[in-house]
Length: 114
Image 1 (cartoon, rainbow, N blue to C red):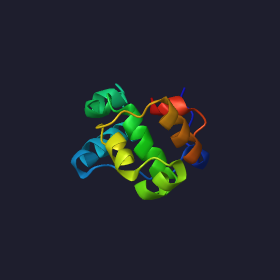
Image 2 (image 1 turned 135 degrees about the horizontal axis):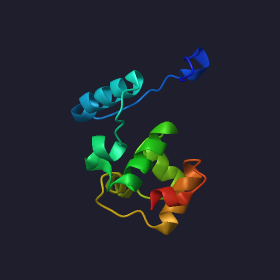
Image 3 (image 1 turned 60 degrees about the vertical axis):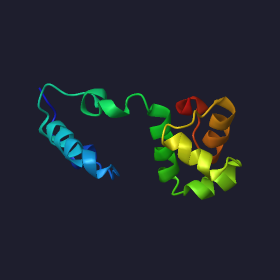
Image 4 (image 1 turned 30 degrees about the vertical axis):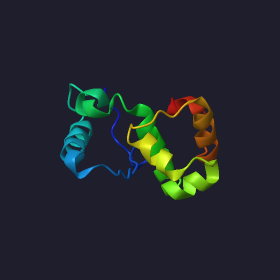
């Protein structure tokens, strides 16, 4: 038997997504809210992002900390254009940079960026 929802079960999420995928996100959320089966994995809904996990993580954590690429550059010593290239899958992040980024972005595990 399912438990009824209480106010404690409800949280508010704020998402920033590209306009081109906003419809997919809304559709996915409606399915989750309705508690319909089958559920879809993130990979099924957003297959275009599955090979870009480190790059998405970098952009996400930078946004969470409300930092611009330039501000992150100043905190890490990594040139701003290289941060841009990392976020856009044009440059690998690498172990040493991942450690610097994790420290600057308050992320406990640098391996999220690898």
